[in-house]
Image (cartoon, rainbow, N blue to C red; front, side, top):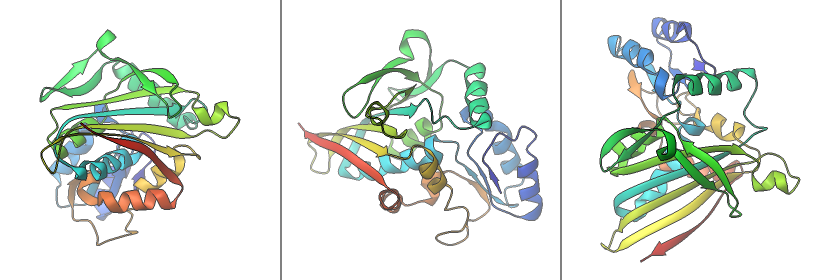
Length: 258
């Protein structure tokens, strides 16, 4: 059972729990997951629940964790996502964006080890595209922040989001999606290390979001056990990146050993 759009009455979750079916939610958002988490905790043995309303259903978390293998310690994670303004989805997708923006204009980040809500100027950010063009964006409350912070131990994690015109459409090409992943810390030899990579897909967000749901659907691996799960708990980051490349994702980046 996949809740691809907002299910405000949780009918899909209740049906999945009643029938013992896997349930996956990609539309709840960080601000809406409390009822799903409580329902899952109350009936922990009823069905597997994948809370995956991360960006691209968790693929950015997985791509970041794959890059993180180069590090012994990560101090800072910065994610900057650009969504083409013509690729926001249909009425349900637009309604999700409106619902989230109505709930709060604050962003959630981890700063010096503390999960912190930021507003105003602190929430604003410049999000650079792969060709160097900068779009205005802001920190958003998204599950990628706690997932990455808790998976890596990084004390500083921020996810910035911008909607606009990416380089591909300025060149007259179809809408694409871009995500910049910046990591800073210490490499496996103990030396300072940083990386900066772009994840780009020329077909926009849809193929990547679709790829993100495959694990709980039983398309790979053993059946998922009942309980509450997040994408990084179920999918191997290296395998996820391999699959992303297979469906047309490109990674553009550099290392900066200092």
